[in-house]
Each structure stands twice: as C-alpha cells, then as structure tokens.
Image 1 (tube, rainbow, N blue to C red):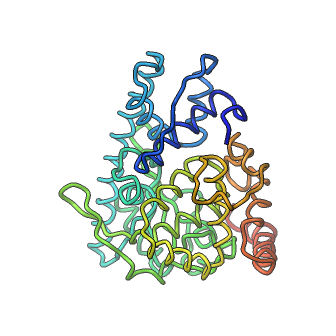
Image 2 (cartoon, helix red, strand yellow):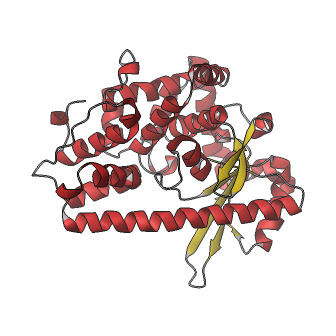
Length: 359
C-alpha cells in the first residue's frame, strides 16, 4: 500500500508495524516522519488499533531523535504502564490456575500473555487486557465457586447451571471481574468452552484439544497452554471471524504467527482451518497482509478494498451489537454458502429468541 494513499498518521503507523513484523526478514523499510503529522491523531490511532507497544518499540529503536519530546514521554508512560500491567496479569493468571488446581480443575490460558510469549517472543511487546481460560462447559459451576472465593464477582450475567444452554456463558463467554477498594475493575477473567462464539456456528470446542498443550516458561515459572498451531487456530477464529480483522493488531498477530510457524506447522494450521471451515478467513487475513503491509508471500490473494479501508479507519471497532457492519463481513469470511446460511440462521435465532433471556 502506497503511503500516498494514507493520511500521514496512518502511513507512519503502517510503516512502524511493517518494520516490527518483518524485521527478522531484513527487509528495508525507511521510516520518514511527515512534517504534517498530527501526534494527537497518531496517538488515537494507536489506541484504536491496539498497537502502542509495537509502535513504541519501533520508534524508539529506529528514529528516537525524531520523535517530539512530549510524545516520547507518552510512549515511555505507555510502556511502563503496560509492563506493570502484564506482570500483574501473569501473577493473577498463576493465582487463578493454582486455585483451580487445588480443586482438581485444569485451566488452560490462551490468547493474551501466552500468545505474546509464543509469537512476540516476550510479554512486553503486546498489550493484554483480559485473562482468558479454556474450560469445559461442565466445569462452569465449579469455577464460579472458585472465582467467588478469590474475590471476583460474576459480570454481565449470572449462570444457572441447570439452564446452562439458556445462558450468556454458553453463547458468548463467562466473565468475572475483581474490583479494587474504589470499585474500579482491576482484572477481567473470562472462561470459554469454545474459541468461537456459539452463535457464529463454528462447530468447535476446547475439549477436542486438551492434549495439544505445552509448558510455556515465564522466567522461573511455567504455564501450560496450547501449542503454537492450536494457539494460532484460535487466534484466527477470534481475529478473523469474531472481530473480522477489524484492527491492525489482529494483522500484526497473524503476520507473526505466519513468520513463526515452519512449513509443516503451516500445513497443519491450514488443514485445521479447512476442517473447521475457517480457511477463507485465514486467506482474507493473508490478503490484508499483502494489501496493507506489502507482504510478498500473499500478493496473489485479493481482498475487498472497502473492507481494508474500514479496518484502517477503525470502522470495525466495537461489539457486534454496536456495529452491524461486522455481520456482513463475517458472512463474507465463511467458507461456503451452506456455512453462511447456517450462521445467518444461528445469529437470527440468538437475536430473536435467546438474547432477551439474559439481557
């Protein structure tokens, strides 16, 4: 994508992310600061696309003397906050895992910190907000008791285990929050029985992958999580199908996945995407990499210019209930007509007959 097609702020953002993603390929990527850059708008773009840490890394290592002093101070503040936040998330993750283990429940964290460790190389170059765990649906009542004992509260809706399939936890996720003494939310922990949302009609559950795990070292400790191929599969489902490749963060994640996997792992990932009918979503993501980041590996894959533009401008931000555009892009991501029809019927059923039960 030519810089002339973008605003000065978007052009700088894309160039920084290209440098971050493809630096190991020794691709030359000159980063030039346009004199007309509005640094307030640039900061807003970083927040919209969820990429302050990769951009921080690139700007301070590539052109540290060209950044305005006030903006550099903001970058340092963001980095310091994120480092502290990610450390706290790791300790809280370990605490929840240990409490569940005491009750003979195995929790597998995914996304967030495990993803950052596996594909970014460390947990301080990717922003994480929530803690996500994979857990069988039959354990949701048990985990409720554990989370309440740790000082958490159910969030968004309560669960009735006898009517689990009429609950938000079945169709979306099962979140808990912990507040500080001022009532502010400090941790949001979500439990999922599927890497998708049930309403999207992607037939997949975490119970299928309990043996596809690795021990991931975090300093002197380690956490059990899914191996790279399955972690990548779940990221594609979430970024591509749930979020419709709506942020540049999603594309950075995808690029780093494809950089990290060897040939066999890539073939295994493609086979899994075909098995679960999300191969087209993977290909769309690759097409985005070719269009926005000029990735030479996928130049043969073409994607909607409107979709690309909507992503760049942040028009796909927010939840499905707040952004109806996502529905149409989601349908475009499905592999065939049959999948599109089943997904449409599933979403309509949820909106008309189920959602009101726990709103």
